[in-house]
Length: 477
Image (tube, one colour):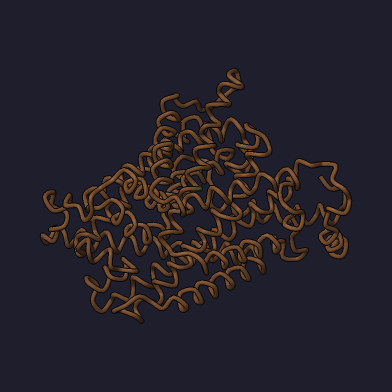
């Protein structure tokens, strides 16, 4: 919207790079959408969550049921998001939909929680997983030292922040290259696991053994198991970023969901079955890096392949989340919901350096105060909260604008079923982990006064405005 020619050239260059990056992942046909959706879901979460799911589910059999049902819930949510994506064709995902439907306050709260909770916490979890898998071979009989894991995680975050600040092209090439890591690790685990099962090594998977509970099951613990699994399935809502480019979205988007979500669910379930073909539940729960333990038991002299593959996967995951989270900060600042400083981009590199530095700083702070599985409960609770609010918005939009053209219109039972599950899951999760889940809720609600003071209050006294970003803007432009 600016009339300054230098600013316009700067913004045009940035969005050109961003468009090229997104188009490298997108395509107009159903097959490409399937690959895009599955590729965004399958990530480092499958190397992190199995331990947490088993711990809260209480048995091998029930943990596998949680993985399958988790995929079904993602399919329901994806169908709802597909309708929203073609009905409200705006970039920004949940943030744009909720702002359009419920107004600025609810949209700001989602943005606030994403910037300060969801993205930094997810980055912290993936970075800790990276450091655990890199260090675990050096500490085979014990956990890696706390300081070592935090230090290596911080170095990784700082390195990738520097890469993203320096060049969009470097960041996208890193993403393409390191995607190979997660695919190599998963294929290796599944193939080796199936070979073990064909040899008769499936004692932990036999029905009479699989449903022997390690602890007495409770609804609250089952809810936490679903939260742990949902971390591995996160990314299913990224499908909305391709709705405008897909040919015949009315047919191809639901078709892509019906193919990609079951495919991911099958891969995750087979990966967990492979784990249990060579590890007892006790061994899995005692492991700090499940895939490394799996490799040490079955791969012999080639066990080094597993930590390297998972490290590659998590390294690429950190890079991807840094890229997307910084762009969300940029988008929110451009809409006036965050300080204008975060909407500034480097004149030559066309990278949102202030937004990247904010994401990096928030992630390092969370790294120092949280433990991996508690952080997963923390971020999954807020993720589910934002998903539920967005899907509730679909029902409200149906009532508010019933005559609006909707190229995709799901049956009302789909969003209602999702919201019923959502309410039960969040209610019992909050009951079981009131501190961990409640903390995220409190941080989200701190955005209310920030919104009214910083955004809604239009005629603030001049002294409240910070002249710092204006001075920097003048100096740079």
